[in-house]
Amino acid sequence: MSATLTFIRINLAKLLLLIGGISALLTWYFTTPEFGTVFNTFNTWNIDITLFTLFTGLIVICMRYFRGVREKTPGIWMFELYGLILIFAWIIMGTIYGMYSDTYQTIFLSTKITLHIAILGQLVFFMISGAYRTFRLKSLRTVAFALSAMVIIFMNIPFVQNGWAGANAFSYWLLNNPQTGGARAVVITGGIGAVVLGMRILLGLEKGPSRVTEA
Amino acid sequence: MFNYFIVEQIIRAGRAAQLLFLLVVVAAVLLALYLSKNGKQFSIRPIEGLEATREGIARCAEMGRPVLVTPGISNLTAVQSAQTVAGLTILGEVATKSFGIGVPCLTNASDQQIILASEGIIRNSLLTVGKPELYAPGKYVRWFGADQYSYAVGCTGQILEEKPGLIVFAGYFLSDVVVTGEAGTRVDAVKVGGTLGSINFLAMMCDYLMIGEELFAASVAITEDKASTATLAGQDWSKLIVLGLGILGVILYALGNQSIWFWLGV
Image 1 (cartoon, rainbow over the protein chains, first blue to last red):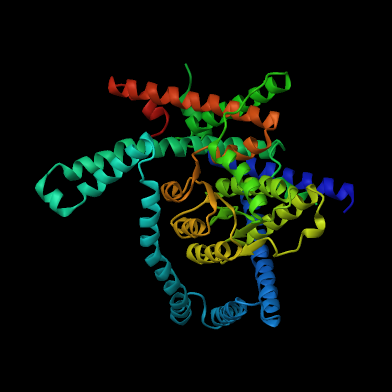
Image 2 (spheres, each protein chain N blue to C red):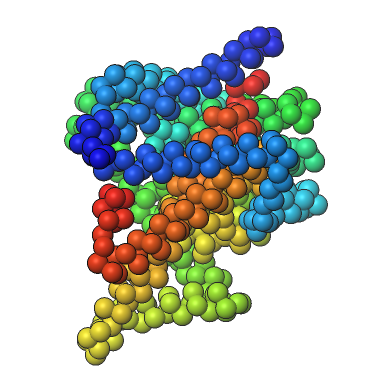
C-alpha cells in the first residue's frame, strides 16, 4: 500500500473517531439538537459498519469451517460440520418463520441453553478449586480476604441466622460498607483510566489498536 | 449573580458536574503532557501484573509455549468497550514483544468487530518485528461465538489445545472467566487479568491482577513511553481531586451540609 493511502487511512480513521467521539460527548452534555443530529448520523454509520462486519464475519467463519471439513482437520472437523449445519439451519428457519417465532426460538434455545447449563454446572466446581487456591493464608491481605469471606458464609447459614438476629445485618454491613467502598474505588479509578486511555488514543500516543489501520 | 437557569437550559440536568470533571481530567492530562515536553520526568510505579506479563513472555520463550491474550466478551460499541479497547491495546504490545522473540501470540474473539481488529493488530505486530510472512488469517485469532458461554467453552478448548505459558485476561469478563481461568491453571499457565466486570472472579482465578485503572495504564507500563507516562500523571492528579471531593463530601455530609452530594448529582 502506498504511503499516501496509508496516511489517509490512518488520519481518516482518527478524524472520524474524533468527530464521532466529540459529537457523542456534546449530545450527552448539551441540549442543542444539532449535536444530536450529527451523533445520530455517526451512530447510523456505526450500525451499518457493524452489520457489514457481521456479514463479513459470517463469510469468514463459513469459509474456515468448509475448509476444516473438506480437509478433515483432526479432532475438530466434526464440530465445524455441526457448526455449519446449525448456522445454515438458523438462517433458513429465521428467514422462513421469523426470528421471534416459537419454532425458531425453541430450536435455537434448545441447542444454546443446554450448553449454558453444562457450563453453569461446572462453575461451582471451578469456583471451589479457585477459592481453595485464593483463600490460602499467604499474607495479611489474604488473611483479611479469607476472614471476610468466612464471616459472610458463616452468617448466611440458616442455623446462625435463626440463632442470632444480627447475623444478616452484620453480613450486609460487610457487603455494603467495606466491599462497596472498594468496588466504587475500582469503578471510579477505572472510569478515569478509561477517559485518559481515550485521550491517549485521540492524541495518537496509544499504538496498540491504532496499528490496525497502519498496514 | 451567576444564573443557574441559563446553565440548565444549555446543559442537560444533572450533568454539569460530570462535564466540569471531564474538563478537569482533560486539562490535567494536557498539563502533564506539556510539562513532559518541557523536560519534566514522570516515573511510573511498577505494576505487578505487567511485570508478570513481561516475565511470562520470557517464560513462554524458554518453555516453547505460546502466549494467549483474551480481550473478553464485549464488543467495540457497548458501554464496556473501553475495557475491550484496553485489552486490544495490551494485545498489540504483548504481540509485538512476543513475536519479537519468536513466541507466537494467540488471541480470540467473541464478537465480529473484535475478530477484524485483532487480525489487524496481529498482522501489524508481525510487520513491526519484521516477520510479515508468518501472518495468516485465522492462524492466531480464533472466534468462538458471540455468546458468553460459547466463548468460555471455545477459549477453554483453545487453552487445553495450545497450552499457553502465559494467559492475559484483559477486557470485559463475567463468570465465563471462571471456566477459562481454571483451564489455564490446569495447563500451568501464568495468569494475569484486569477487568471492571467480575473482578472478584478474576481475583480468584489469576496469579496477578490489574486493579481499576491499571488495566488502562498497561500499555504505558509495557512501552514506558515518556509522553504516555505523563498522561498517567494527569490521571493521578484527577484521582487526587476525586479523593479530596470524596473526603470533603463525607465531612460536609456528616455536618449536615449536602451541597457536594447534590452538586455531584448523586
